[in-house]
Amino acid sequence: MAGTESRTDDVQRMIDEYLSQDFSTEIDDIFLNVLGRHAETFDFQDNQLLNEKAIVMNHQEDRRISALGRSVIPMIASGFSQQGAAAIFVLAYNLKDPSNGQYIFDLPPEAINTGDVSYIELPAQVLYSARAHEPLPAISNVGEEAGAYCYLAASLLRMFIKSEEDYVRAFNQITTGYAKFFGKPMPISPPRPSVDAIRTLSHFFTNKVIYKASLFRILYCSGNTKRAAGMRRFLYENYLENTGMHAVSIFAKLCAKLNCRAAVLALGTMTELETRDDENHSRKMWRFGRIFDENFMAPLRTKACPAFTYILASALKQEDPQSNQNILNIVHFADISAERKRVLDAVGKALVTEIRKMPMQ
Image (cartoon, rainbow, N blue to C red; front, side, top):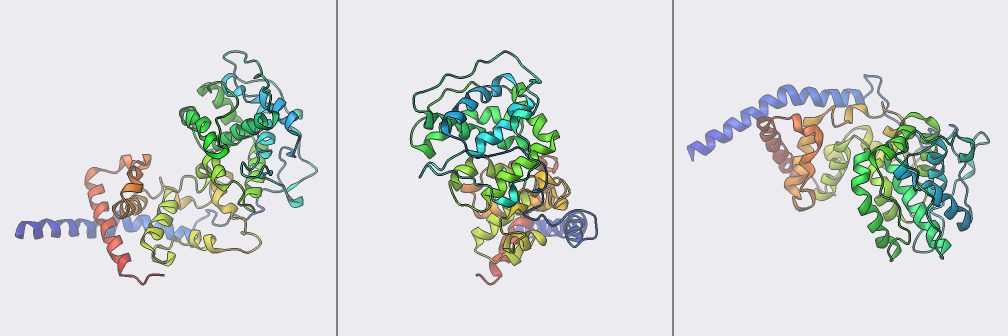
């Protein structure tokens, strides 16, 4: 018993020492920034990029969408041109809700600018081509064909964040996932994407503002509709929300699991943004703010506060291990030593204990 008490005391001293130095400094950095001491951005309004020039997106008949998809989707294997990259947004914008056949996206007047550019006006030269890929053959059901191409195009929106390797690895899951939403297998047989070909798309998405502005329009539409919400999350939203800020999503899940008020683990402005419904924040475009503004919530990036994020992740895993088996595999945790992780695990356990003492909702 004495040995156990001694080990407990040792762990407690380690926790106290760490909290008084490394971790407290990290927390100070987070919240002093949130309170505005530094130059990072802590607000992201719904109309932030609406005035930027984007690709013209409008609803088109299935016949035209199918023809466009046959020529553009094969670029996942042969490489994209700027024109092909722009056409991805046209296809994605024409995605329909499998439950009722209605268009998911509908740009409101304030999101349409006279300076927007048609995809056909952009250069058609392909940056990389391992081999020429012929357009895919037409199928008899033009409506299903159009829907499949729009579905695949929407999955490519995750390339604003995900790596080329990640997309290639996920491609089978994407194509087989079609049946989950449409109730039948994908009616087309797209080519297998290559890392080099997808890299050309990532290059355009990363380096051309017009593509980010086009993504912003689609996300702006999403913020005002619940149509096909599950499919949208599966295809791209889960990857684009709160990018690089694991602490935010872990914090939200932990609060939900413990049924505690958000104030218990308040993350400053992020918590405030979550509850705002004024006209500048009702669409919750701040969820995607870091795609468009790298300074937005910079102190909450996982690489800026790995220990803080690890404590939240450890607490959540201790509370709900079945749903969070891999949550401690976040890449930024690799640089935390085993000894420090042991201390942080203890802090996470103590955190849960303290939260449970708080008044519930």
